[in-house]
Amino acid sequence: MKPYVYIGHPIEKETEAYIAKHCHYKIWNEENEKVPEVVLKQELKHADGAMLTATKVTDEIVRDANQLKVISTVSVGYDQFDVDVLSKHGIYGTHTPYVLDDTVADLIFGILLSASRRIGELHHYVKKGKWTIEPDSAFYGQDVHHKTLGIVGMGRIGEKIVRRAKLGFEMDIVYHNRSRKPEIEEQYDVSYVELEELLKTADFVLLMVPLTDETVKLIGANELSLMKSTAVLINGARGPVIDEGALVQALKNKDIFSAALDVFETEPLPSDHPFLQLDNVTLTPHIGSATLATTRAMEMRAAENVVQGALGNVPRDVIPELKSRNRV
Ligand code: NAP
Image (cartoon, rainbow, N blue to C red; front, side, top):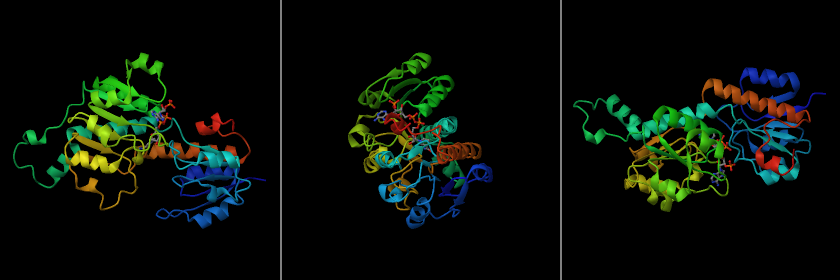
C-alpha cells in the first residue's frame, strides 16, 4: 500500500503529480492561511511523511504522529525544526540545499547594490517626480567595486557570493565562519578573520549564517559600533541574527551608511515597524530564493525527500544535525 503524506501548503501541479505517483496525500490549499495546529496534529496522526514549510515543529505537533518518518521543508534554512524533538521521535528532518544557491546569491548582490548606490530610494525619488534638477552629492552612494566584503557564514551561498564579488566586482574578501574553509581561501584568495576584525575592516558586512542559539543577535549595538560609518550591512540569513532595535538606532544616527534586509524578526514586517520610516534601508520580503524556476526546483527536491522518507528510505537531504547524531 502507498504511504500517506500530508502537505501543509499549496504546491505546484508537477510536484503534486510526482507525489501522487508514490503516495496518498492531502494538501492544505489555502494561500493566505496557515494550516491550523489542530488540523495538522490530526493529519500527522496517520501520516508517514509531511511537507511543512515555516511551521514550527515542536513536541506538541508530533507527539501523536506515531508513524511519521519524515518532515520535509521547502527551504534550506531549518530553524523551524526542533532538532531534539525530531531526534527523540525518530523523524528525519530534511531541507533543500544547493538548488537555490545562485538565486539567493543574485538577490543578495541586488540588495547590496541597492543599499550602497541607493537605488530603491532614488527610484522613488524619480517616480514621485522630484527629479527636477541635476542630482547633487546628497544623492551619492558608496562604491562597491574594489571595496572589502566581509562574509559572516561561508557556506554554500556564501561561496556563490564570493564568486560574484571577486570575479565581477574585484572586491577584497574577508570571512568569518564556524570552521575555516581552506579550499575557498586558496581558490578565491579570501582571508579568514575574527568577527571583530571583519566588522572593523569591511565596507560591506554580509550575514549568511543559519539561525541557531549561537547566532541569535550576533549583530547588536556593540557590533554595529565597530563598523565603519560608510559601511553597509546586508542580512540574507534570518531576522533574529540582528538586534533590530539596535540596527534602527544605528541607521537613525547614521552610525553606518545603510542596511539591506531580506529577513526580519517578525515576517511579514509589521506595518508600524520603524524600518519603514527610514530612507537608508533597502527592504525585500524574504524573497531570496523566490524565482519561479528555483521555487519549483526546491519543491521537487522537498517532494523527493518526503517520498523517500515516507517509503522508509533515508532521504537525500537529511539536516546535518540529525546526520551527526547518527540518525542516518
Ligand atoms: P550553509 O551551507 O550551511 O552555510 C552556513 C554557514 O554558516 C556554514 O559555513 C557554517 O559553518 C556557518 N555557521 C554556522 N554557525 C555559525 C556561527 N555560529 N558562526 C559563524 N559561522 C557559522 O547554508 P547556506 O545554504 O549557505 O544558507 C545559509 C542560511 O541562509 C540558511 O541557514 C538560511 O537561514 C539563510 N537563507 C536565506 C534565504 C533567503 O531567502 N533570504 C535563502 C536561503 C538561505 P560550518 O561550515 O562550520 O558548518
